[in-house]
Amino acid sequence: MSTRRLVLLGLAVSALVAGVLSFYASAHPDGLSQVAESLGFAGTARDSVTSGSPLAGYAVSGVGDARLSGGLAGLVGIAVTGALMMGLVLVLRRRASRRER
Amino acid sequence: MHVPDGFLDAPTSVATAVVAAGVVGACLVRSTRHELDDRSAPLAGLVAVFIFAAQMVNFPVGAGTSGHLIGAALAAVLVGPATATLCLTVVLAVQAFLFADGGVSALGTNVLLMGVVAVWVGYGVFRVTLALLPRRLSSVSIAAGVGAFVSVPTAALAFVGLYALGGAAPIPLAQLAAVMTGWHVVIGLGEAAITVLAVSSVVAARPDLVYGARGRLPALELRTPEPVS
Image (tube, rainbow over the protein chains, first blue to last red):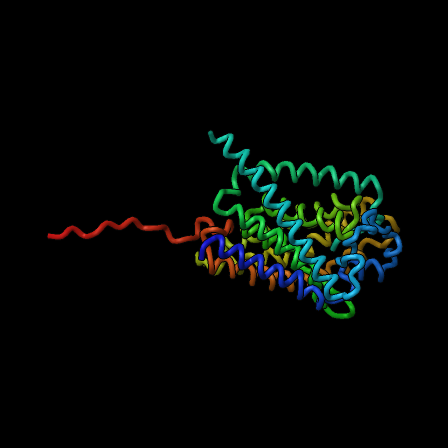
């Protein structure tokens, strides 16, 4: 399998996971939240300064349908993550090839 | 296991941010010199994307509790531990700044727990396990699963260590350690399952791109045609 094909396949799987499967995620508190609640220190958590973000809580503000809102947020998330990581990798590779010369 | 703002006091949060920044800086250098090459570079982008996606899907672990993939060992085995630290840092930063998942003042803490402790402990356990297993390509996925399993409760215990230094509330630490370990051992089983699935898929398709499989591939033979006599 070519690298291009592998990456495209991986991106397709990721898009399905973030865009569709995420809707079926368990809504229960995760391990740390559960522990914080049971031991009584959950109340010390403060709202994030980014809680007013239009994507806060993996939902696009203004999109009413939960399935659509969460799916869109997931797709935006993988696009931003992929762009940042590939940008970083390209910068690092460029610096490496400059040094090799 | 995203730590929100407020669980740890300001000095502890600042200290974890300083340590995390130092390790990330060292990983930028190590990743460039020893891990990234032109062939495997696209895989680093894919790994970050997959981890972001998979972290959205909490799976139930019983008694009204859930967990999700961290992806530390998965990333370390596929693209190398220093590059894995960079992948997790990018994912955690996107989550904190865009999605309000994990506090912004707690970003250093989260990078330290999931991007440093989970990655390097997971990778260390992977290496040790791989050395004990038969020299087969399939051993790579199994060792990755073991590393993944151990990485989760280890990161949970690292949180307990930080809480001992600067927790916001007076909580009995032995009890905190016990319940954190208990839940995260169960979550670690899910982590191991997803990691084995993901690593074995890439190993099946392109073992030559997998960092943790370096030196495990059959050497290519150079053959010349038999001379005609």
